[in-house]
Image 1 (tube, rainbow, N blue to C red):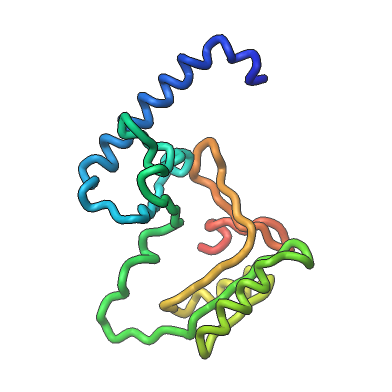
Image 2: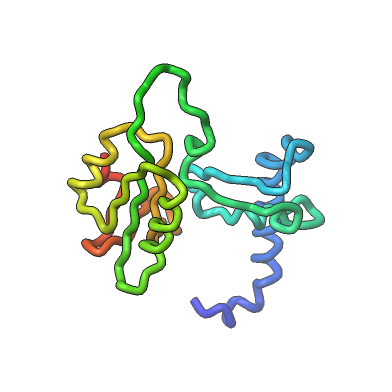
Length: 171
């Protein structure tokens, strides 16, 4: 659909979007407003992957105008591990590069230089990933280009030199 053809209903579309964004704000943010900090981090689930959280609206302004908004694939990244005596492997840094000029390899090399010892994988095969993920680790850093299905938000992937890897490939 060409957006020019929708100009006659643009006001209606904007009002509908504002209505839904405000309702989401009222459900998700308003109960926590007093607790908000400079940065709000979302770990969306399901259809919420397709919601621009920074565009949630309180009736006066967008959330992105009130705070920095960040996204994470999992809230587990921010949880402390259980205090049980479990041994962990060294931190793992993984770079996926689909082209020689990709910055993901440089990113992984630089980030891993701050942690010693560290395991580094550059464009690993699925077998190498399975082996690396078979050991629990306190830190895993993955650099590369990723995508998510914008319609359902249930299918995501990482582009690699060997094609796309999905969570299904890793389970």
